[in-house]
Image (cartoon, rainbow, N blue to C red; front, side, top):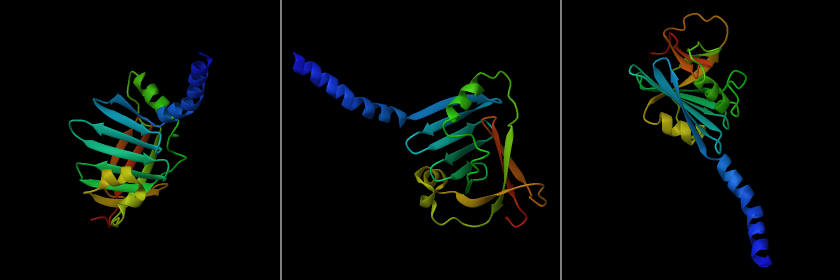
Length: 182
């Protein structure tokens, strides 16, 4: 009798950390209603990757935030393009704060404009090796025209046409075609 109790206790001690680790690595997905459409945020704790996707009648985009590699990729289907940039960690929400950000958005009654904005200029430079940006960015951008996006600061002239994406009512990602981007 004592042997079976001790065996159960030892198994519990051995398996508890393994099960806790497995629970922390699972994906979390949250659907958030924003301005007549919705955004879906998926968090992969194992790979430190967040994916935010917006679907409306008029547009579809998806942005991948890879906190491990420090890259951001945004796929914009109306343009059939993907933009890859270095992550600005001071402007981005923290990885651990993303679930709380989603919870806060669910409790809001009225949409609000994002409190932060990052503006990028697009460079017509082909990215040859998408795999170096990680598997999530590779799978998101494969088959699309993929461009490098560089963050710009201060007032910019001749940015050309811009596309502004409201991500979780927290951050606006603005991608601008410069005059040389044709």
